[in-house]
Image (tube, rainbow, N blue to C red; front, side, top):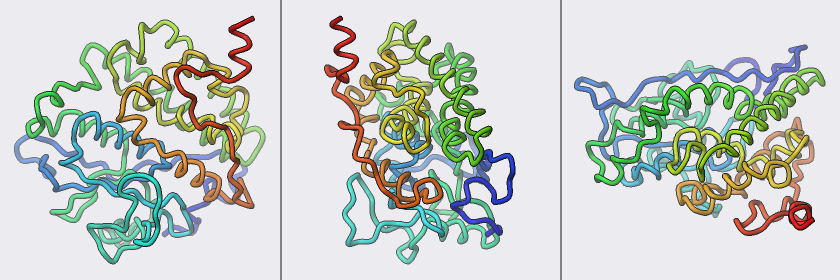
Amino acid sequence: MSSGKIVDWVAPGDKSGAFKRQQSVFRDFISRKPGSDFPPEKDRYHLYVCYACPWAHRTLIVRKLKGLEDIIPFTAVHWHMGEKGWRFAEANEHLPGENVTPDPVHKDYTHLRDIYFEVNPDYNGRFTVPTLYDKKQKRIVSNESSEIIRMFYHEFDDILPEKYKKVDLFPENLRSTIEATNEWTYNDINNGVYKSGFATTQEAYEKAVVPLFSSLDRVEADLKKSPGPFYHGEHVTEADVRLFTTIVRFDAVYVQHFKCNLRDIRSGYPAIHKWLRALYWDVPAFGETTQFEHIKKHYTKSHVQINRFSITPLGPIPDILPKDKEVAAVEAATKA
């Protein structure tokens, strides 16, 4: 490993105080083209995720939307990240969520980092989720979530039932629009909450949090114009997947833990709040892959430089509101 610690989110001595996300290292691609090094095959690949992580959450959502549950198995690591990075749950630990278990592929491995060192003993980057692993070649295919979800879109279609082949999260007529949205959604929102929360100077914090809320305002305006219930109308697209995993964590964690408190979603953004709950309650791939215990405990108990005593706030209650309920202030305003 490099001289810095895994939990050094801003390099010690970096006077800018700004969080700079490391680029993913493994960037190969599963492809159904003849001669591919990584062809689509059932049970050849194993997906490693953490329920707490928004980037990994993307892959679980798409895996379920595309009906890949029997083709690509997964393991979820424990929610805690320590000095050695993500660890696997032990057999006697019982955490909520599917497949929070010891690594079934490598029986003796205790941490995700063990897989990275198996692939490259000299690896000196971060050990991140999601990690897509090829069991046949004992290689990491990719640890870049935006590319893993696109592999899942169509590369396995030849071995999927017809109803899942038809699921198109990146339709041709919306691709340029989605790509344009992805750029500012990633920079200002998905990564913006981290740039706000991990900042170690006031200047770096304000430089991140102001664009974050400006872009949330932009999302709010887009959703008000959309025929709904989803970002681009009646069908779920990549835009919904990429945005949801940040927004579902926003009130539960980012408002207090990352100081993203100019507004919350449930009282400050009615269109986003409606969109969020439509996905969570009506589309199983979103709600069933969301585990609030993992989310709240990971951030508050792993980021000791932010939360020294690892105290997890009890609120907000509930983690997400039912579709027919609003917070008291919103209900009062609508009745006035």
